Image (cartoon, rainbow, N blue to C red; front, side, top):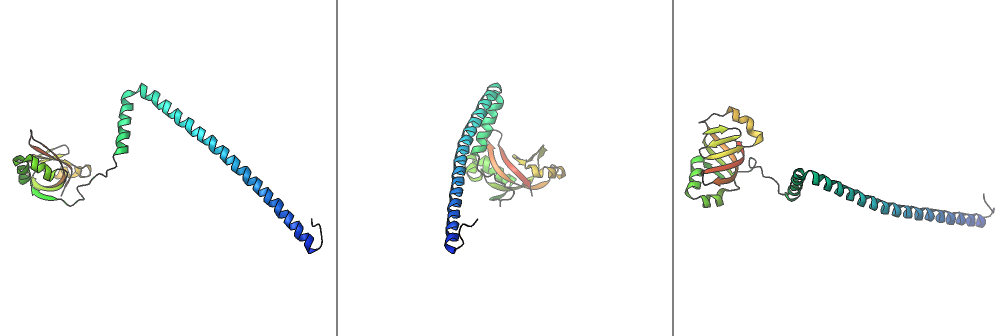
Length: 187
């Protein structure tokens, strides 16, 4: 409804409408801010109560199942602390290419020096298969634990056959004079 017929009256009416609209909008925005603040406070309380309930339930379950709870805590700790990417020696370029006999001799002659040189290194070893047991392929005194992706290839191998194996040197047993390789692939 227009109060006046001249331009000035229409202008005044327009300004009044705008001021009313601004008051209405600001009241609504203020109301929304208050309701959001209240809902954030309620949400914080709900989250705190929920976390407390989970801790209490986990504590009761842990008291009743000590072995499982201990294992879960250990697994959680391992998962949180193991940020090291696992190596895949089959995709690495072998740092050493050596025969099984020369590799064994290096450890038998000077185990301490061989450990420094070879442990945690990708090596490519060529030699004759002496035994195949499960997922372990043995070349003289070198036990090669075959990677799960390569186990199918073991069916085609025979004792006495010449083979190249690439893997990660993980240890040497002085007593048994056995060298252990892990994550091995057949080349």
